[in-house]
Length: 107
Image: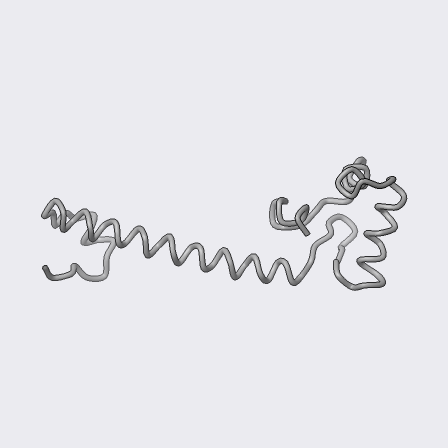
């Protein structure tokens, strides 16, 4: 799961020539054992899914989407809070603040 979490879009490309060799290095085993393990995680344990080019975990994708959404909401709230704080601090009612906030708080 750590390997998937570090990848772009949380999917690992297994169609690359040395992808299983890299996985074997992370798992500290031989390449054939790593490949067998991944195949078992897909077919037997149903922990991973594949389209032949990538492997991924649906649960991880769902959790990471939730986390990214939450992170984006927090960042937006922080941005708005900074705009309000700076407007109050410098007593500015600039166009930028008016355009990016739905309301300007009363003092």
